[in-house]
Image (tube, rainbow, N blue to C red; front, side, top):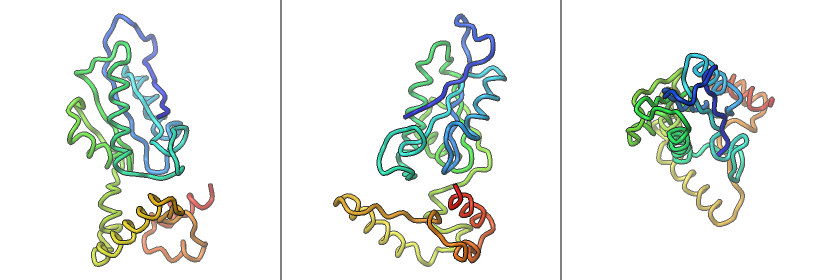
Length: 194
């Protein structure tokens, strides 16, 4: 896992500092919004860490550019492991900030990781709920069908077959325009035009 650590200005190795793990949005990397928040928080006196999720950005793992919930949650635990051993971190003042999709993963990680004394989210997006139920619970009637498709895709990948991607990364302009939710149209456009 690749990460950037930010320390306060005038960092004093004789002092103890509160620390914050910053989890990036789905599709983000540590140099984007998570890194900006981490830098700002360091300016306020915190030691912070912003990391690229496994399979994304500078972090390792194949196939590339996948978002696996269990790994995203484990990435947060791993960032906590690292920052808790960083010089001058006060482990009794460890916080967690999750942004967008990172917010949902942060809440999931904090359920079992009691090192986090405070948790905050910004524009939290519950990826699990949306993947399971559809945006705004619009696909409740097709949950079992989509679970079957996901199981088949996983079995295909485990057997060495082609990795199947879901979502909007390879949609045509017409398919993007037909998406029922404005937020998804903007997200699809940004993914298609990277």
